Amino acid sequence: TWSMLHNLGEHATQIAVHPTNPVFILVSAWNGLHRSTDGGQTWSTVFSGTTWDVGFHPTNPNVVYSLRYDASLNRCVMHRSDDGGLTFALKDNGYFVPSDPANASADGGRLGLTPADPDRVYVALIGRGKASDTGWIGMYQSLDRGDSWANLNGQDGAPYDAVNHPSVANGNLDGGGIYQGFYDFDMAVSHNDPDLCWVGVTALSATYDGGETWQ
Image (tube, rainbow, N blue to C red):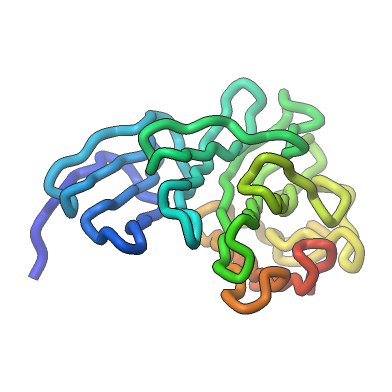
């Protein structure tokens, strides 16, 4: 049996439950980040606007990560909270910036976290950074909780190459074929090997070196 706890009024994109305090819940949605500290009986909105993902640090739940839409540059950005999700700060040193914001499209992002390297954070991005991109922007990695970032593949978006710079969001790794967007987009990181990540969009791709190469 079920009972209604809260009507978001929009699409929910992720639910994160505190690892040691199960009545503390964060929900990301297209209309913001929502927070409950009493098992969903009451809710507050931490911030409004499109929010694609939220997750707790694997070993320090006072640290919370969130992916939000940034309208000024038409991109998905990461914010970090160090006070349990009460306040957030932008973390974008070395992070993705569209090369052509006027023709960019932020279709969403997913967080990747792992207890095998607790301070490591991955962000996989779909959409466009320029007109020639066809769905896959890339995956960024941080080794210091988001304070600095790098795309180990060395390139954002097109031109795609099925071997060196594949598009893992399209039906074909060369950037052609079907691209469906956020509703079938997810990622995960191994709990044993922090370099092993899986990204699923129209197909499932894996990287064994933190995003430098893909299969």
